[in-house]
Length: 97
Image (cartoon, rainbow, N blue to C red; front, side):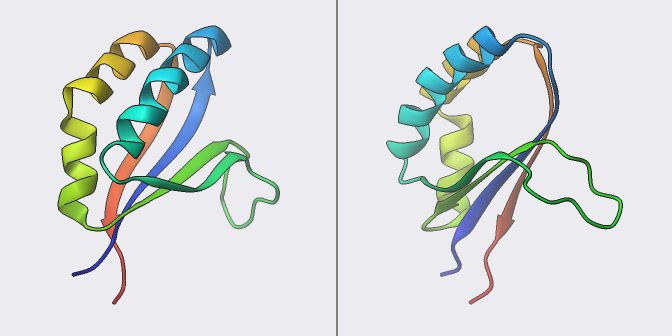
């Protein structure tokens, strides 16, 4: 079974305190569903038409597990803490076997 990857790009962050509150809730919610953070932070280099922005890459044992984490009540609570203080681009993609 292919691993699942949850990739998030933060286009803008208007309230860093809300992002911190989200992180305190989201991290444990994701980890409790088997998520493992592979990369997290500001872009170090940007190429092509890329935008220098915060990004995260989280690995799961499967796409289904990544989707279950995203839909979990604990993660939904984290999203409520975040509110609409960030413009994000969130994707779940399958790994290559």
